[in-house]
Image (cartoon, rainbow, N blue to C red; front, side):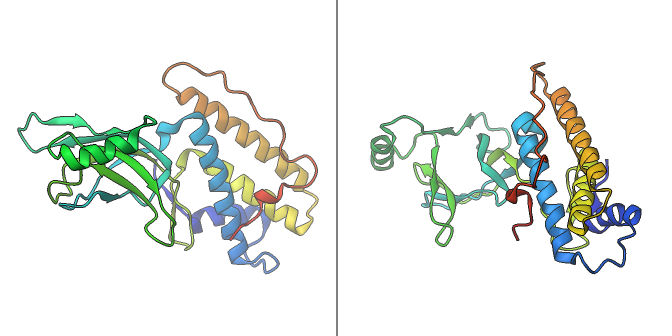
Length: 242
C-alpha cells in the first residue's frame, strides 16, 4: 500500500466540503487537525497492535563511550530487543539485555571497573532534552567504534506532517484521519453536517479498532470498543496543540 502526502490527504478532506478556497480555517490549523488525527491513530495502534510500528536500525558505538544515541523516532522507550553480532561468519551473536534489578547501579559500577570483557548490557538514561535527551548507557563502555554490529528492534512514532509533501505513514487508516479532519472543519464552521461527520468518524474509529484487533497474531481479540468520546464538547486535548 502506497503512502499519501499531506496534500493528498487534505484534498480528500476539502473536495467534498467545498473548502478549497476556505480562509476561515487556516493552513496551520488544518495541519494541526491532521497531526491530531495521526496522534489518535498512533495511540490506538500502540494500545492494540504495537507491531504495526515495529522497525529496526543500527546503533552507533564509539570506543570508550558509554552513551549511545537512541533512534530519533523511538516511541516511549519501547525497545523490543538489541542484538549484537560481532561480524560476518562470527558465532558471537547475543542479545544485549537491559539491566532491571534494584541493585543495578552497584552492578553497573562493578562491571565498568572490573569486567571490561563482559557481554554488553544497558540501561536507559532520561536526561533533560535541553542536555542530551534519552540515551542508552552501555555496560561496559563500548570497546570499539562501529555502526554495523548492534541492531535495535523498536517501536517507532508515526510521522507527523509540516509540509504538503510530507508522507502520512498510516495507510490502512487514512479514512480515520480524513474523517477527523472533516469533522473538525465542520465543527469549526458550525456546519449543520457536523453531527453526521461525527457519526462517520466514530464509525471509522470503530472499524480501525476491529481491524487492529484482527491483526493481533495470538488470537487475543477481546478488545473493548470505547464509549463515544464526542458527546458534548470536544475534549481540549483533541484540538491543535501546535
